Image (cartoon, rainbow, N blue to C red; front, side, top):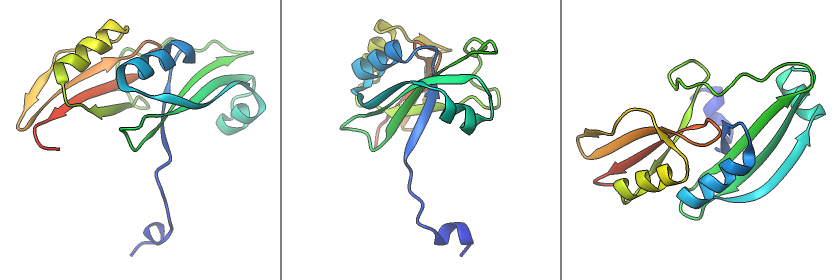
Length: 151
């Protein structure tokens, strides 16, 4: 057994970077049922220390939904000394990531996500036992909607 597996390691959260946390909170609440556990605005010294980027500031929230065993963090960065690049439209670049949600009603969830401002990146694919689609939420974060015949 490796040393890493000997230690008690537990999953805590997944984080998505967004332009502004407020519209992103609304989106993930309305589409997937997430509610903020807390919201912190204007974190400066700690985020600059964590990232090694002087002048970096962030607003962030951690959210929880009753039906998912996941804490979702949304974080919006700004800087006093450098421009923050726009959201990357390409989810396949190194550093980009996404979260995936298994849903009971694929078409309804995709329609709801679109109604609350999500952009569908391509088109849905069918695979043995399921269906999947990639989307981008308001604020730029990537997510996947997935339906599985047997969960």
